[in-house]
Amino acid sequence: MSLEAVVSSLVMSMQAGVPNFAIIDPLLGEPIPIEGADTVDRGSLSAARRQAWGRPVHAVTLAPSVALPPNLYPYLVELQGPDDPWLAGTVEIAWAELSQSQIGGLASSGTAAHRIGGWLQSSMSAPELTQAISAMLKVNTDAITSARYQRLADRRALAWLRQVAGDARVGAQLGRIQSWCYLDACGELAQLKSPGEATTPLRLSQAEWLSFMQGEQLHQTVARWLGARSQSQAGHPASGDARACYAQALAALERAEAAARRWPQRFTKPADHTAWAALTLLHPGIETNADVLAALNAPSPADEPLETLDTLSPALHALRLKATP
Image (cartoon, rainbow, N blue to C red; front, side, top):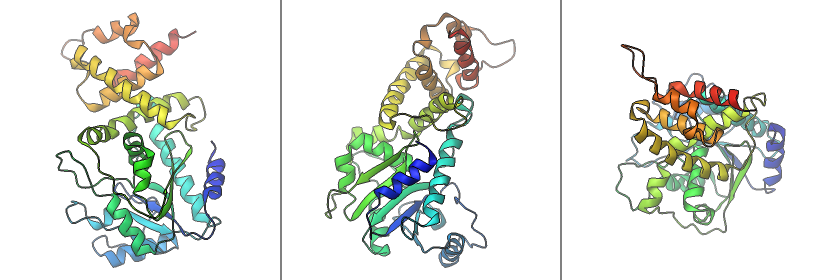
């Protein structure tokens, strides 16, 4: 799907007369320059954001137990309907974020910030809406954890939560948030709809929470894999089905665990796992290839540390590409 097609699909998804908002996750920085803001003073920060966007903004207040300064809380930009230039503008920013996360393929980390969390429609007043979102961002699980913030304003987290818990349960907590759209890992517009006005809180089981916590490595694996796939497509995000990509990436991370047990000195950090997972997706059966095995089993030069899988992955990728007819 092209950038223009995403904008068109987003406009078509919008219900006439229902207010719409862009949700912003500023944890890793603002998506547009915010000048003259005192990040300690909430009023000053809100005024600076309002000035920068030229639109009303509404902060989402997190629970006191969340150890983040308020300037890093998510916030909403109130848009002025489907013709608002910032609708297309925020799609363009989201598209650039996705491309940046995938650029470089295996040579990248796949960790670029995703600040545009998506586009919401709701008939609630802004204070009601921010309160409803705040409730969704509280960790609610049977698992024992010190985590307090479920960072769904990062659209990748929301996409993975849908995979872990299912659309019915995730959608049921939206209540009067009629819809939440976002750009997925494959550059497609994804949409989660509320089944009705009643809100059913989502509580994750211990197993679901453990799966959800795999999200960081999963997103990095997908970004590096799809980035390598899209390098021949002028930087456009690789097309595909995001749900299928997540399922394949999860299986690939399990293969990376097995490889780490086989070559422990090659796997010293999480990036080594995501690199190997991406390689197995790009080149099925790579773990049995003689040339790759020779490279992985080769000793390091005297007085030099052994290259980790993350460092070695572009060379292994090139090795397999060269052997491909």
